[in-house]
Structure formats: C-alpha cells, structure tokens
Amino acid sequence: MYNLAIYLYLLGVAVYSRFNEKVRKMWRGERDAFRILREQVDPNARYVWFHAASLGEFEQGRPLMEQMKREHPDIKILLTFFSPSGYEVRKNYEGADIICYLPLDTITNARRFLRTVRPEMAFFIKYEFWYNYLHILKHRNVPVYSVSSIFRDGQVFFRWYGRQYGKVLKCFTHFYVQNEKSKKLLNKIGLNNVTITGDTRFDRVLQIKEQAKQLPVIEQFTKGQKVFIAGSSWQPDEDIFIKYFNEHRDWKLVIAPHVIGEDHLQQIEKLLEGRKVVRYTDVSENSKDLENAEALIINCFGLLSSIYNYAGVTYVGGGFGVGIHNTLEAAVWDVPVIFGPNNEKFHEAQGLKTCEGGFEITNYEDFERLMNRFESDADYLKNAGQQAGNYVKQLSGATKRILSDVKL
Image 1 (cartoon, rainbow, N blue to C red):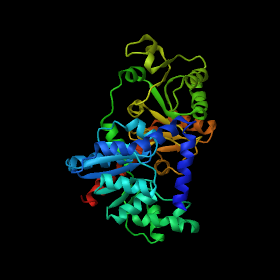
Image 2 (cartoon, helix red, strand yellow; image 1 turned 180 degrees about the vertical axis):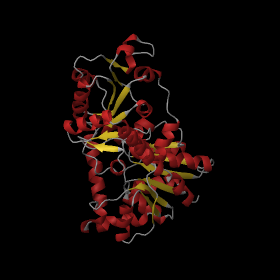
Image 3 (cartoon, helix red, strand yellow; image 1 turned 45 degrees about the vertical axis):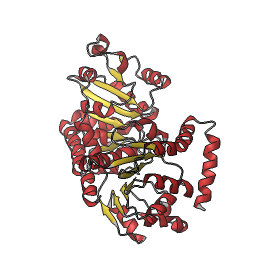
Image 4 (cartoon, rainbow, N blue to C red; image 1 turned 90 degrees about the vertical axis):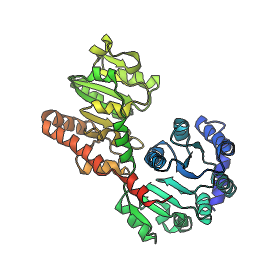
C-alpha cells in the first residue's frame, strides 16, 4: 500500500510540476540528485548522512553537523532535503560536503542511493520517516538516529490503522526526543530506545546570537527609544499591533514581514496612517529620512535574528494563520515574545508561556492590555524578558548530549 501511494504521489508531482514552480524545482532536483551523487561522492571517504525536510529541520540539524565536523574532520557530510524551501536556501551551505534533494522513497531509488553513498550512519531530523530508506538502512546494519523528534497522540503510528506503517519506527537505532510525552508514546508501542535530549534549535539560536551582525541602520533608528520589533508578520498580525502603535507614537516600530512583495509593503505603509515610514534598503546610517522616521520596514531577508537584539518587546507572526514562526530567535535576546493563538503544536511557545516569557493574544484587546502592562510596569517587562532568555539557556545542550552518545 505504501509503495503504491508513493508511485501515485510521483505521478501527481510529475503532472503538477507543469503548473507550479516550487513543485517543478523539487521534481527536477530529485531527478538531478543521482547525477550530483555520481559526480561528487568519493568512494574512499566516510559519509554521515543528514536528512532534513525543509529549512526549519535544517536549522535543527545544523549544530549536529558542525559539531561533528569539528570533532571528526575526516568525516564527510551528505545533506539532503525534501522541500525546495530548504534546498534552494541552503544548497551552498559550507558545512556539508554534498547537498542534494532526496530522491523519492521508492525501493529502487533507496537501493541506488544507499549503494552510491554507503553512509556509516544517518540522522533524520524531527519528522522524517521514509519507509524504504529506513528499512534498507536497517537491512544494511547502518545506525539511524531520529533527532529533535516530537510525537503526538494523533500521529498515524499510534492509531489502530497505522500499525503496519508504524513498523518503520523499529528501523531506528535510537530516538533523541524533545519531551517526556514523546518518550511515553514510543514506550507505549514497545520502543524503549528513547532518550529525552531536548531540541537542538536551542543550541542553534544561542549560536546565532554569538554570531549576530552589527546593524548600524537599526542602531541609529532605535537609539535611546522604546522599540517594538515584529518578525515574520502577516496581515492579521499587522492589523493588531499597528493599530496600537498608531495610538502610542512614543515607540519606534520595526516590522520584518514574512512576505516582502511590493503589494504587502504598500499595505503595511497604508496601515501606518501617515506616520513617517522608511524601508531598510532605502536608507543609510546617517540618512535624514532615518533620523525622522517612526517606523522601519525590513524589506530584505537574512537580518531578523540580529535585529531582535534591539527590541524592548517582540512579536512573532503566523499565529493567526498556519502557525507561529521562530519564537526562540527573539527570546534568546532576553525580551518578551508575543504571538497569536495558533501555537499549541509549538513546544517552545508552550514553554515560553509557562515561564511567562511568552504571551498569547487572540485579538486587539489582548494585545492592548499586555502592552499597557509592559508600559506601566517596568519590573514586569524586565522579568518577562529575563524569563524568556533563561528558558532558552536552560534548555540548550541537546547537541552535546546526542553526540556524546553517538559513536563513529
């Protein structure tokens, strides 16, 4: 049944690739993977394979890859992606020796891939459970690790109808999971090769903080002011926080929207009701426009994790849509983090709420009450920021715990 589904999926991708650019990139990338491997694999080298579905999983695997390289410089890293949103952004990542798409999980592809690479071990990040690759890895006695994984009651492995597919979990040598609930769920189906190590993203954001960029334009814009920074925002987020700051103009406002298309940028500027607004790429450190500006829109990528350094309060978008973006990138700077209601599947958001370093809002009134509290109670604001930062520090260390257990 699984293999039939894979071939039907393959057919669907082939057809849909004619109409969708993202799917077309994936389709071409998967077919090109074997050429890349044929040209770049050194048959005399030792390979460790890391597979990440997309960009978020890559960030979770990155600390492991880089630490492994430091400890074992003779090892070569093969990094594969499923999604174009991961591969296209990180195809030139210098921490891996070979980077390509993962060919679709057919028996033929899996055998050919593993026969070409012959990895000494494999790491599947968070949610990746490819049936044929995993069974053939097990047959070849290659150690396979699931890292930063998290399991929930509703997943197919824990349903009566998913027992057959659930056998794929027995192919893993060990699970390094994020929390106690994941461990209990795996134990419940007879899997005891489980260790709670936490999420490697905590290590990654601390690493990012250490490597943060100095941003003269942001420094000049925010100097000596109360600063609110919204990252990865969408229209429903902007409708709420911009309304508040149109009435509280003593705050400097930095907005880094998730979508930076011209239509969305103009929409944000329209919401700001005549306030002096500038775009990041249009100003320099000593620009007069920057000096007089009240709101700064970040109309480029790659700066957000460093921009949060300048915040007094942060907001992370997506919580009124499919789900919030990366709250840890903000929290690591010892500032409170606000986000929308769709956060229940995000373990780090639940942790931030519990320690009172993160705050959920469901409407404008929630946001207004919270911001008024921050404005009127400096100690409350300071404590919330400290709780957010401490939460990140206390849950770091997963990379070290995993690699101290895994032996090359």
